[in-house]
Length: 112
Image (cartoon, rainbow, N blue to C red; front, side, top):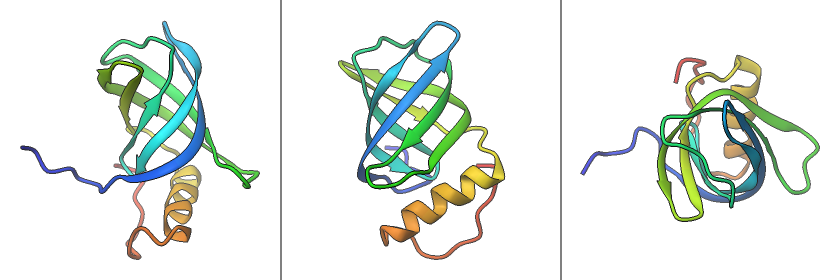
């Protein structure tokens, strides 16, 4: 079995996504610095490229991911990999995860 590059953590967030064929909203089931699992009734295709806008309860900021291909699909959910995240959004993502006490301090990179 292949080891994941980033550890995943259960979270409760909302996401809006837009691709060439798919557009919709969902709930973020788990999150890492490298991707997320999304629960949604909207059908997406494996390998479709999406733009994401993620929000969290009790927070006013949002984290945008510019390029996130769909890597897997299961009934009612799918997983995306974060390929292109601007440096500011990546820092926000890292801070969000750190505030939850989930990852040690490491330098963030905009090239995941």
